Image (tube, rainbow, N blue to C red):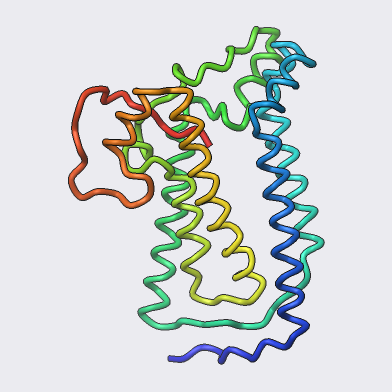
Length: 229
């Protein structure tokens, strides 16, 4: 059973796609700048240890709000690029479901959801001193992070790339999302290698970046580390 036929893309649609990609690229740059070590150090100095503990929560809120703004500003690009039905379509949906499952598994593998800043906020509401950031302490290779080093990014890319019906608007966002997650993973690996040294080296040797191994490597330091996205 065949799906709707793709339609030719007029110049206006291509211009809209370029504009949308530029919007998402701007969001990605803002998202990355807010995560830089220099900005974090400046915020820690200005806010003090207690208030700086809320930085991850503030980062999450700003990222979600700016994401919503870009989503509202993005032009409507409904032109159909491809549509896959039948067994092939079901297989693509299965890959997407696997991607969502990997995302959820990675989220619960993170210690206490510190990435979102929720434990830190709860500590402040209870008039307790939030835990100081400690990458070496929070770095663990349990759960999804024993499968690949970047399970959240892999799950996101599987969901974005394997869509049975792809419009031009979805394609632009999928292209941006996959490129951004690959670039983010490479930059994060460099940061973690500098901060964790041999712990990261051993972890990277045992656990692949994106493609799971059929036979995991064993070796010293099995407590390794999970990439903190």
